[in-house]
Amino acid sequence: MTANWSRRAFLATAGASAAASVLTACGSSTVESAISPARFIAFGDGMSDLGQNGYRYTVNDGAINIWSQQLAARYGVTLTAAASGGTSYATGNARVTATPDAAGVAGTPTVTQQITNYLAAGRTFAGNDVVIMQGGTSDVIYNYRLFAAGTITSAQLTANLTQAGTEFGAQVRRLVTAGARYIVVTGTYNMGRSPWAATLVNDAARITEVAAAFNTALLLAITDLGSNVLYVDATYYYNLLLNAPSSYSLTNSTTVVCTSTDSANSIGIGAGNTSSARCTPSTIGAGLAYDSYLFADPVYFTPAANRLFGNYAYDRLRLRF
Image (cartoon, rainbow, N blue to C red; front, side, top):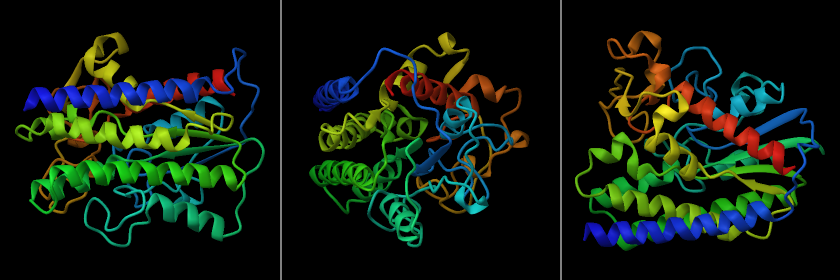
């Protein structure tokens, strides 16, 4: 059974990679970036949350510690949370279109609602704006927990993630229609290799497969938008960090560095778990240099890993547009 899950996950990921190659090639350029972004605008979930509720899903050390912030900083642009007057609307635990969020909170704006609120306020996109679209993490967590509770079947789990990926792609298209010229899109990393998945007996391969289903559906939904959209493959890049951390100045790709726990369900995987939303440099495991580790908590990444992915996205964007 595990072999079958793994094979299907591989095939799904291979299909997504092929679609990503097509999307990336469309309209690509060999010259360095001709755009000079004056503003970055971000929509997404905890992977991109810059502190909508006063904390980030990483080690909260006051540094540039989220990938979207690092991407903007490489262009000399400051990106901050909308709650602090900035243009990053990404909110932890947000799903693509459905509620409640991954933590069971009904009032968290979905990625779709984040965009709706932005457009409804009369906001537009300037010609040199770069829009960041990231999502899928919370949809994987929420739907897997429904499956684990016996609320949905395995087939429904896959179907739900496929639908969420399709809906995410529809929101990317919505941004293009609304006038966004440059959009950086990323889905989920391979969450089947997260410390969270490692604790789930026999289901890590299943999580790999449904995360790939989300990404594949997303890519199929945006495959004709290559003149405006750059897909940055989180699964590909984080697999590099997982497979060879020392090549990226990391020493560990499996251990969670934060010791902060939360009596609430702050990252969606259940109450009482380690949560980076409560993590600071004073809540790090004894003797651990957190910037040489990959994972802050069972789902989210350390500042160093975020900066590495932000640099990767910068290199892709600089060469693409």
